[in-house]
Length: 217
Image (cartoon, rainbow, N blue to C red):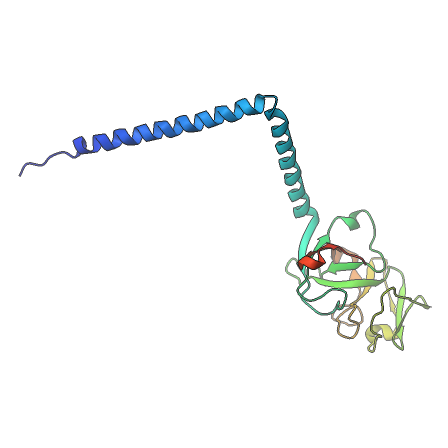
């Protein structure tokens, strides 16, 4: 049986594909030239400048967010009623590069600084060099009663602070606002927080929607 080449049948299909490819290239080139002409025109130049500025701003914002902020979820009830389980926040990792943590700040920290360590959220009560003592549910700082701005539960378990806890020059004493359901500096599992283990300040609530906004410590 005599075999026939498929080439004559494929030629029209190949020609058609070449034509379509050429039209596509021409269309892309036309769109490119039209866009360039618009950008160079009096009307197009300010529009392009505006779009370029927005793009640069968004790019810079993304870089800042990646390097200076971190998203974190509240996964424990130790800060209730101030912070609720499931809420999400940005922590400001830059702020403590320029200023020291202050009393009342809500901070995110790890116990040992390892990369895979759990991040905890608590409130700073004691500052470096101070002595913290808890007697009869009352917090004493260097022998003076600490008056809190918030109305929080009275402490029933002073833990290590019953006999007084002296802070080194790089240590902070932290408590959870849910005073009787919080693992914090009163207990051996946490103890005092070294400044180098502080990840940043809880700064901005991003979830849920009705709580979005800057934190008020």
